[in-house]
Length: 131
Image (cartoon, rainbow, N blue to C red; front, top):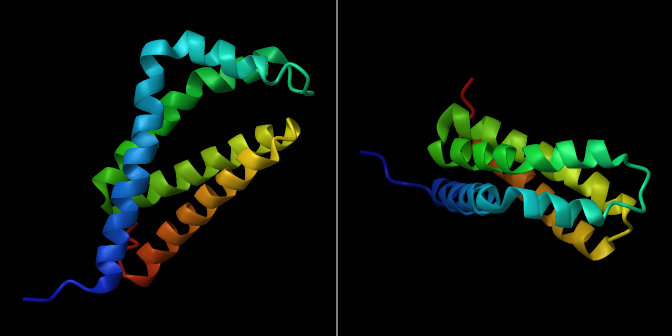
C-alpha cells in the first residue's frame, strides 16, 4: 500500500479549488444568462470589439466555465483538458479585460493563469498526465 504524497495532496487541493471555482462561475450565471450578458456587454461598448462578437462570447462563456469545472473535478485525463480549457478561457477573458484597461481585474486573471499553469505542471510532475 503506497502512502499519499504531499504533491498528490497539493494536486487534489488545486483540483477541488479550481474545479469548484470554474463549475460555479458557469452554474450561477446560467439562470440569469441574459442579464449577465447585458451587464457584461455594456462594459465593452467603448472597445474595438463588435457587440455581436462580445455577446456571442458571453453567451457561451458560462457553458465553457461549467464544462471546465466538471472536467477538472472528474480528474484524470479529463482534468488535464479541464485545466487547459479553463486556462484558455481565462486567457480570452484577459484579452477583453486589457482592452477595457481594467488592470485590477487583469491582475486577478493572471493569478488564475498561474493556477492553471501550476495545476497542469503538477499533473506532469506527479506522473498523472495521462493521454
